[in-house]
Length: 157
Image 1 (cartoon, one colour):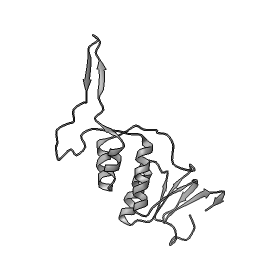
Image 2 (cartoon, rainbow, N blue to C red):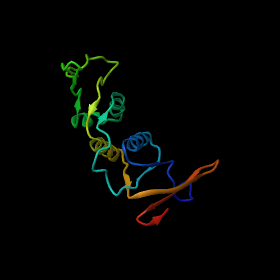
Image 3 (cartoon, helix red, strand yellow):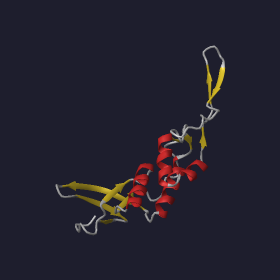
Image 4 (cartoon, rainbow, N blue to C red):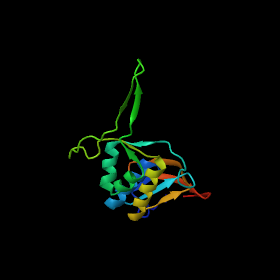
């Protein structure tokens, strides 16, 4: 960041995984200036996570992207268990009853890259973007502010 406080965003988000993207979407909706940086040159091609918990689905609903997330996953995955006596049971095949206090009663099975893609699309709709290939190298804090040193394309800011 620069030493000019008026030109620096209020928030620097380091990492464009699900948490960083979710924070960026919320800040964009709230009108808070931010910069979202990610050291990787582009979106992660793989998945470090395979599921989304019900509370996260509520957050995605609030952000306006739950339909896209749900379209790329499966709710209430069946679980096959084998007891010590060899008896096999199948659970999780029936959805929980509709309750207004539990809008998403089960976890969603979906790859992390799908979640990140949905969050990047929502962020773009809100006017934000990820600065890929941009790494935080150091930071220092004082009583007045935090200064960060970042590198993009071999150039230091």
